[in-house]
Length: 167
Image 1 (cartoon, rainbow, N blue to C red):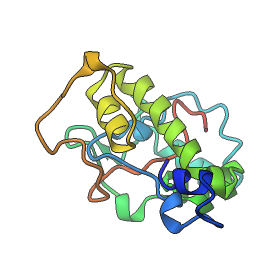
Image 2: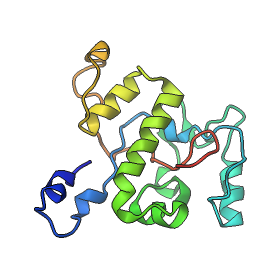
Image 3: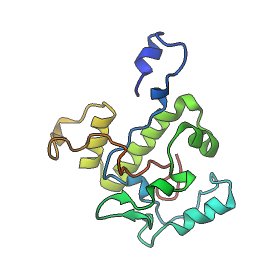
Image 4: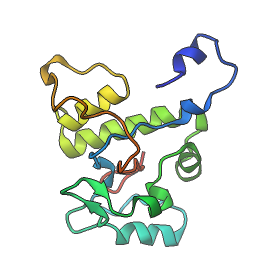
């Protein structure tokens, strides 16, 4: 988690803005696998948003707006609030305190990526590298140089549910 070392060492009196930035990797989309079980959507309090979420689930469990071939969201700029990742969204929808946002979002991403692509997937390797975690030796260097670098350009949004559940 970025900046936690400074705060943990007593170097900061408050959390800087970079503390609240969630890392998303290009061409992942694990958060776009919504699942087909619509139980557990109670965290989406607004009935209109809940119905919108349900309408976005394709028969295979992937969001209908996710381009599976290119692995990008086709409506990224206009995506719904529950598809956005930020401390305000997590606090409002999921009651995650602002100071726990990055850790909670990272846990969700790790769980989602492992569930969708597997524990030893290239996607999980890329995400671990992006958040500065060590990667198990067995996985080695997967992909060409430059792949897996975090970028906001065309990156699928982190969301807060997988298989119809939530963080």
